Image (tube, rainbow, N blue to C red; front, side):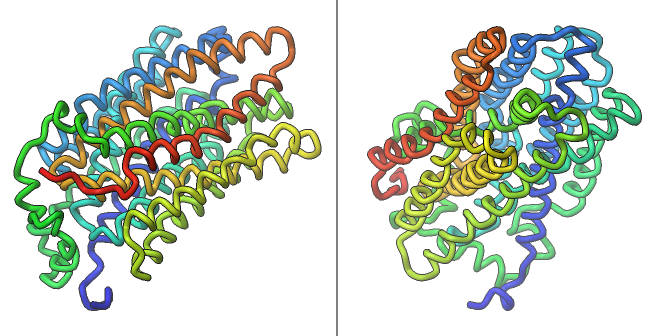
Length: 435
C-alpha cells in the first residue's frame, strides 16, 4: 500500500516529538555555554562544574526510575505534558539562583523532569508507526537533540552578552510552554484521533503480530520492572545505553570547554564550531534511521537490518581517537572528526531506541526505555566521577589538559564497538519477548 493513500498524520505527531526533544536538549545545553560566565560569577573550578553536572545526571537517573512506568500508566498525552511542564519551569528557575548549591538544586530538578522525554517519545513512536518506519521516525525526532544543541551556541552566548546570563535561561526555558499548547491541541492516540483515516490506522497497526499474539492483547497486561529485568532483551538495551550514553553527555557538557582550553575560543567565538558538530549530528540521526528502513523494505529481517546498521555506525566513531592529533594540525580537522563521531552516535541512538519496540510490546516500551535511560545516565555519572572530574582537575593543574582529552577520546572511540558485541552476544537475532 502506498503511503500517499494511507495518510500522513503520524508525521505531524513525529514533528511534535521532534520539537519537544529540541527543547529538551536546548535547556540542558545552556549551562555548558555559560560555564565561563558562571565560573566568574560563582568562583567555580572544574570540580564544581562536574559536581553540578553529576547532580543533574543522578537526578535524571532517579527520574527514569519512575518516568517510564508513569508514562505507561497515564499515557503519552498526559505524561509528556507534565514532564515538559516541569522541566520548562526548572529551566527558567536557573535564572533566579544565587549560589553553587542552588545550581545543584535546579539542575537536579531539571534532570528529574527531563527524564520523561525519551520514554514518552519512544512510546509515541511505537503507538504511531509500524516497525519498518520506527527507526526513521526515531531518527527524525532524535535529531531534535542536535537542533537543540545547534540553537544553543547560536543564541545563548549572544543573549548572555546582550542581556546577561540569567536571561539566557529565561528565554530558552520559556520555549517549552509553546510546545505544551501545541501538544494539548494536536495530540491523541491513533485510534481516537479524528485526523487519522482508517487506512492510516490499519497501516500503523500492520505488524501487530508478535509470536502469534496480538500486540494489543499483550499491551493490556502490566509488566513489572522485576519481570522485565529477567529478559536478555532488556539487558542488551541496558548495557548498550550504559556504555554509549555517557559519550553523548561528554560532547554536550565538555565540547565548549575543549574548544576554549585547546584553541582559546571564548564567548561567541565558540558558536560556529559547536554548531557545526551538531549540524553534522543531525544528518547522522536522520540517515541512521533511513538506512535500516531501506534494508527492511528490501526484505532484510528487522534484526539483521538493525544490527548491520549499528555495526557500521560503531565503526564511524573510532576515528575520534585521532582528534587531538588532527587538531594539532588544524582546529577544524578536530571539529570535523568529532562531528563525525557525534553523527555516528545519533545514528546509533536512533536504532538502539528502536530495538525496544522491536523486542517488547507497546505497553512496556516506556518502562524499558526508562530502565535503559536510567542506566545510561548512571554510566554518565561514573564517567564524570572516575574520568572527567579527577582527570581534568589533575591534568589542568599540571597544564597538560590535552592529555586528559586524549584519554577521553580513546574512551569515546571504543565504547560503541564494545557495546555492539555485548548486545550481539545477548540477543543474536533480537527475538521479541514471549509472554
